[in-house]
Length: 494
Ligand code: LLP
Image (cartoon, rainbow, N blue to C red; front, side, top):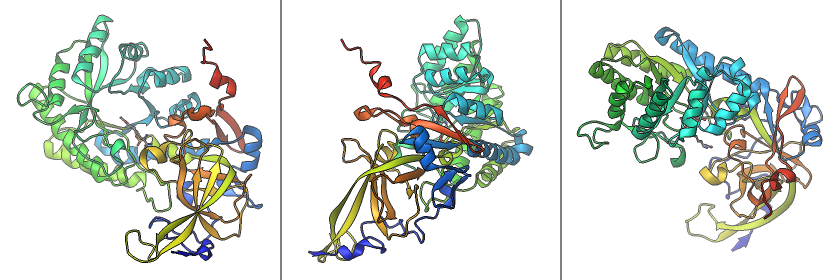
């Protein structure tokens, strides 16, 4: 075995994954990862709308989610415009439901509403946020594979625009509850078109072997030849408490290619046309879900919204022509694509540690040869898997940058880790950071707007960070960070 400490400075490390390049300039911001308005100021410090990260830390502490309100609004509009343009001549445009599960608070609901979008919720809690924000019920949808009776009542109380029904049993419950109230529930049926999107197993949702939706496969119910989806359509048409608006599917999340969406749209349109003929009904709505991917690292290259929208519109147009039906009103439910890139997480660096890792001399694991030892530096920050569990849950890759200053030091392969009692507590698995990163420096991790705060926990009794919205040069808390008092106030002490 040879020890080779000289590989520390500058060169690509054999420990790095193949996709990770040594950046030409460690101080540069790779634009697709960052919200509009994030720059380095003349002093080299990261700033958003002119507010420096050290100022944000002084005012709000770290860790901190820093979100650009203007960027959120711009992305919401851009998504909505792209799809409305693409579908204008097909069905007069689309209804865009922002998927609140990705990140939700009352301020965001108001932005969504002001930008002309609607809101997709997935629980009674999310409905409570919607209600608190005052968005009209008809602009809200409710999802969930296991809705409680209480959630169904709440949906009816709020006069929601749609309840997306996930199973035959739920359809019956919604029908009964609505009937007992002397009301009619507006319902979409969530189907699983069997499209397996290329994404992590746990965020792909339209293949058969998972918990969501009504199967479109012919043998999926006891009734010979009837799929669960068809059985639901047939049942829905017979319930006085149900107004069947149409069909829904969601094929997964963090998807880059339009093919999966297009295939799902075709399958649902085939089915919609068949049901309209067979049951002499009109299903005026088709929701194609969310799932549009974003860039987390420089190698991620998601398609622009307009490209995806055009590809989906082309398929809907030609399929409806082929089937001889008029196109249903299309809706979509993007979450990540709107909020993901609006936000970075600001952390303070604490403990640093460099380990030496044995690797074969070729640098290619598994090939014979003398092993060589390479350094990997662990950079601990003041948060971790409690504010971003995505690397642990989905092997998600992120990127990070030294934010409080620039540095001319050589790049060093680093692993940004949290402060939890788990060796898997990784925030950024592999990133080149300047060799001189030290305790007290601030790091920024971009792309943390979606499914980070929303999935955060109090593991190890860490207080969940606050969320700051920056707009036109001023920053305000839209969700305050937790205090120790918050952490203790549900402990009954008995
Ligand atoms: N509509 C439905 C029915 C959904 O289930 C979801 C996401 C969306 C829309 C929004 O998907 P988006 O556009 O944000 O991809 N926690 C995972 C993602 C779970 C997605 C759950 N459903 C992650 O962090 O990657």
